[in-house]
Image (cartoon, rainbow, N blue to C red; front, side, top):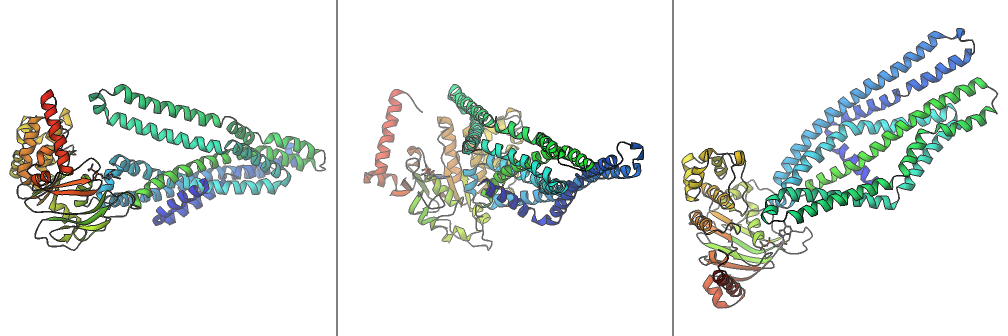
Length: 599
Ligand code: ADP
């Protein structure tokens, strides 16, 4: 499994860098040469010791020029290793930055083409993390780990050749030491350690989620006096994390030190073998040469093995990064039409629409829904939470495509319209309005970038925003979010309405606000809605029945199905689900009035 993951991470990175294949290969080639060069000092030492032993004990006969030559070779090896590795990194960095650039552009283009609904479910935080951290870790991997990987493949091969080539008996002893070190380490890495690793990763994710929730929800936490409870959740997740990290680290407490001890002390295995061989040798000079050489080269082993360990860890990490990025890239792009279509009327028709958020079509959020929202009329959608109201709004704007059936505007299937043409026809006002950290003026003009100043101000007046905007320090030039300028929920929603008025689209999808129901705000928002919706096709998700009495058509949704439809009076007369909802609503209003609560 881990091996499979390692392969996919590496293979995927190579695939991503395929436009810079030449540079990647050059980098690998140079890194391999650098690794080979790093053995030159050992070879030189072998020959220098040989020169010394040949004349020993009369060192005056030492062939100094030969020793000097070998010393130069050692120096050239060290220098070559540094220079070649430098150029390997240079090539890999050029390839990595190119890949990073292309990948970020491709990712940005992909998320633009992704159905909008995914942005809501995935969340901007996660998309930002993937774009910033995960894609950048791919750049890091190509820039650093790929050349190191090639070096860590070549170095052990050269080492094995040297170890077995000079004297296979010492070579076998060294290799036995390496095998022993790995065996001891693997004994520690049993099923339990893997399970601990998974628990540790889960604990880490929980802690991250709890921290984000704590910080982002701070205002609600304070408003509802939840500080102790939510702080407890955060502190519990941190404690869990601490426990699992300790548990995981302690799981290695025997295996890891044993591994490190063995690879740093393989010479302790060589010494008894050396003593044993010395009793059986006839050529003492050759024996001394080989023995001393092995005692020196054995120290290269630990460096090489440490590098392999670090590389294999980075393989596991890169697999995770690549997988998270690919998860987003696999989301199919919204099929886009480019041919313009002429739309004459702006009625919205749902024809036998079914929709499921699961790809496998599991639970249906909407099932066989048909209705028509006529121009100049208000269609209100009511029903219990989870009934499918927001899903209807999301589908009109093609946040998602229907699973079955069709949605038409003026008789044209919305999938046949270019997305920007559809967006030009539909305005949305959501409960939660996103305001950019820009001037209020620009925040309103987003609805129609060509709007004149007069049009923006007129829209703000119609949306009941003008008065509060004029009370802000710089009026329309006030930057939202700067210098402590923050708007209330009701004010934000009125800005959203002003945006929609400036846009002047023939179809309006409204998600009525529930959170800001103080009478003053409600009155202003209602007034703003009236201007916005005059003569438009309005689809309104209604949370309070009081606001929909005047709707031309009411759709009652329950568990994704349309259970009733008609006008307020017709539905009351029918005595069904709507009448039931109305009865409990009026009862609650009486209760609120008689107890003096609410409103
Ligand atoms: P309402 O607006 O009436 O409360 P929704 O349209 O939000 O209802 O939800 C209809 C159904 O679809 C519910 O079962 C809900 O759990 C599910 N649902 C809504 N949004 C998503 C989503 N982004 N991913 C998966 N399921 C969802």
